Image (tube, rainbow, N blue to C red; front, side):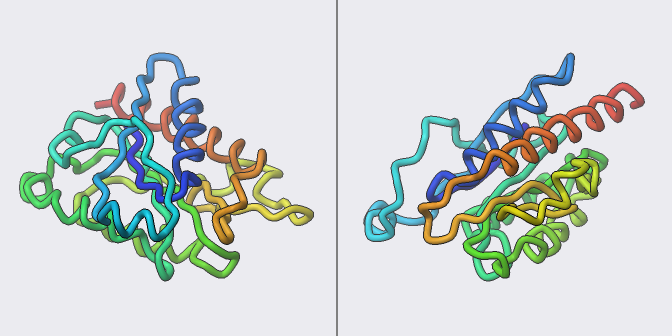
Length: 198
């Protein structure tokens, strides 16, 4: 299952590619879910945020049904957005019973600039996974030559796929979308192996 929060659509575009990558692994069912919005319609309008897509909104309890996860969110001051943090804060019941323990989880993200949290965002988000006992699955350098791209602007890191949103007008590049597809396929294959070994 792939859960995300997206204000302007950048994370959603990456999520769609991650889902395609996961679905390319035989026997894997990939689903997209959004976490609930915490901002009012009035605030979102002032931010010129586009309307939300029709991707279903997830409840914390639905996490227990998944075999693995890839969580995606925009960066706010080098950390996950408050909307995603609020969602994770509501998972106390799952934490208390350790229903997510042993499940693999990856992270993907969008930042406003090159120094805006491409590594600090996933690094600070790992604490959420650790408290639940989830297994963090970074992509490392498995994306190959795409990880070493120096001619064009490219988000992402060994922690996971990423993009640069800038002022909101820049959309994920083809290389960033390929990295997202790779991440979905990579984590789905690991999730499948772990499930079959259990």
